[in-house]
Length: 156
Image (cartoon, rainbow, N blue to C red; front, side, top):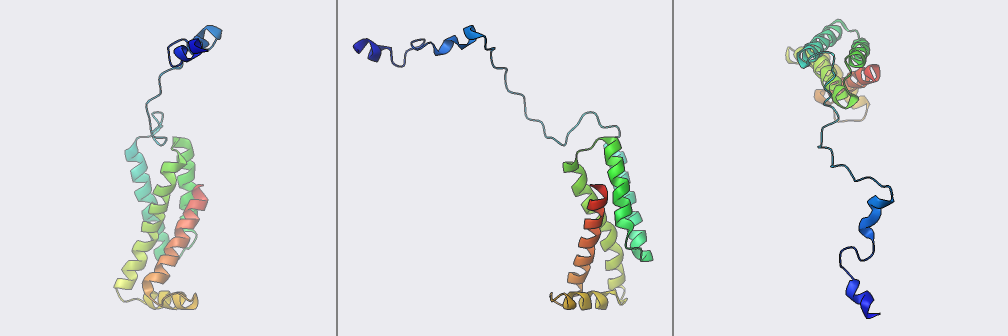
């Protein structure tokens, strides 16, 4: 019994170091952390993606100025196709598409509101009907949120 106490905590006393002898290989060193959105095999450089996002925002802005409410969905479909071809992860692409849709739809609305057109009054009425605070910013935020959802559904 005293021999058992003398072996406690000593190296090799319980054959725990013999696992390699039983056929288990040595554990490889840990792989360094690499973010998931960084892929070395993208087909297009980042500049092409940025230009595509700016072009998408301009297309959405033109559609908003023309009154075409479906343009964010169409641009989202195009962005999703480009994302699939270019092999970007959804973790990087979806936030970029959301920002593209928000900027593309909000810019013409704010431009019209700042220049005294009736869109501000309409946005206040929409917000009041939805029992939200009757401010133009609330109505415009809801409209921009709808555009963002359309673009995300299109690209996803």
